[in-house]
Length: 194
Image (cartoon, rainbow, N blue to C red; front, top):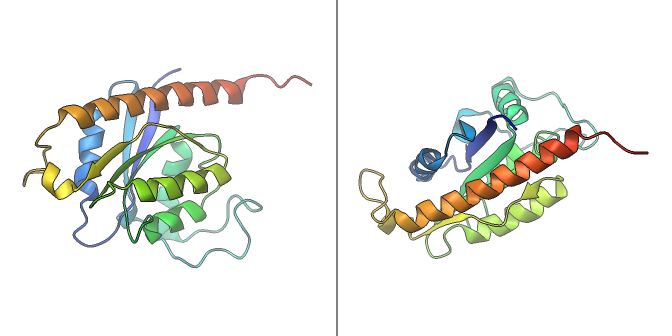
């Protein structure tokens, strides 16, 4: 397979968020098997009121003009990494809105996770997201990167104080994403046997 387009999605839009630091760190870990598209949900118009018909039945609903770029970039991606904090033991509402406004953009694609928060390191959000993406017929890979107490792990310049273990976790995640994305792309192009 040629280079995989990997969309890294910053899932928090909260003022003062740490997501861009984590997302940029992860993007620096990505090797030449992937072409990175860093997507910041803060740049999209994400209304919480959804269309009357589910995207499952109407896969390309009329979306706000401020969401068209996001929709096109999600559709062009071969695989995703969601960078998410825990908000109240789950994931941010902006991320849920971005997910729910789309359907075919996630379908049969591989998805990985990078979490950060206080004690859980984003794992509570990641577990909820696994359930959601299973419903959307996407494949979530097992390995992940987690930053519990992220505010102690990164220095004031946004660099990890001890990068070895997180870098190894990122490599494992990228290896799984590459394998699964290659397998899913091959399966989609294989002839159907009647």
